[in-house]
Image 1 (spheres, rainbow, N blue to C red):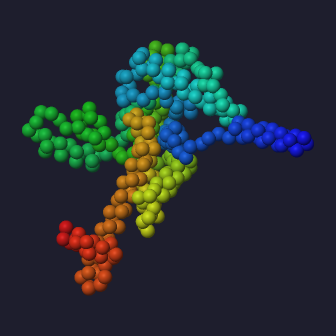
Image 2 (cartoon, one colour):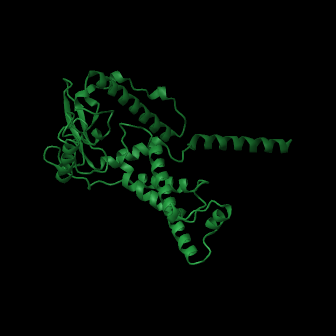
Amino acid sequence: MVFYKKVDTVCQTMLVYANCLRRVKIKHNYLNNKDILKEIHKSKSTYCSFLDPKDADYDMIVDNVKKINKKNILEARKNRAERLTKLAHEAAVLATGEKQKMDQFEIKYTKIPATDVVFRVMTWEHIPIDDVKTTKARNTAKELYEDEDEPAHTEYDEDDPKHNKYVKVNFPPFYHYKVDEENNPVLVGKSHWRGPLDTGSFSKDHGAMTKKLALMFMKLCERYATRSNWRGYTYNDEMRSQALLQLSQIGLQFDESKSQNPFAYYTAAITNSFTRVLNIEKRNQNLRDDILEMNNLNPSYTRQGQSSGGSGSSYYDE
């Protein structure tokens, strides 16, 4: 009888412990688009200037300030209400360690004033023009379309007939707008800007990528390098290094107005980097094998296998 009481006590203790773990433990994914987008937003904000730090969080992206109308303002209010609801829910889950119903933290969009919403307007208006590239683009367009009525456009602004080429920046530039009581747009932020909005100056070097985003890039490259089709190469470290360098260069070029899937964007960049290194190494191996064969020496086992199978070909024969 005493034995069964002890067993029952132990089982109860284990159940209590398991319930405690269930409440405290929160499942974390390896990487997800939500966290990546958050770090991209934080990184881009370091290159921007805002009237108020809260103006950095936008509710809707448009490509023209004229699209800030009643319809889009209503949509932005709904987006803001949904975003604030999720933030309140996440804060409660982290504070209590327990699952919470989203309905308990729901914020009605009708309670969101129109003057609180923030619009991100994609524009190159405040970016300086590169005179050398602009002159070259205009001359090229003049040669191509001298006999046609339709003008050529730039890669930056398809509606610009002047063929302006702007200074290269590390991510698509934008303005942030709010609206006043009469729904008139009011400028509250600029990308690639240092100092006050009216008296500041263009700058593209004063910001920095967040440490967490850099760690995400490293994790992406490490995990991708362990895939079965890549991990067997002796130059796997070089592939990983090249991919990390590529991500550091194009990491902030992800455009939230076109996609909400940065994971796929970065994975494609890593794949291209790995493939580029593989092609370079194959080309170098072919050169080494050709030199060895010209000096009557044994080439690599790969070339020997190709030759014995009758499918071998010299790099110079292509």
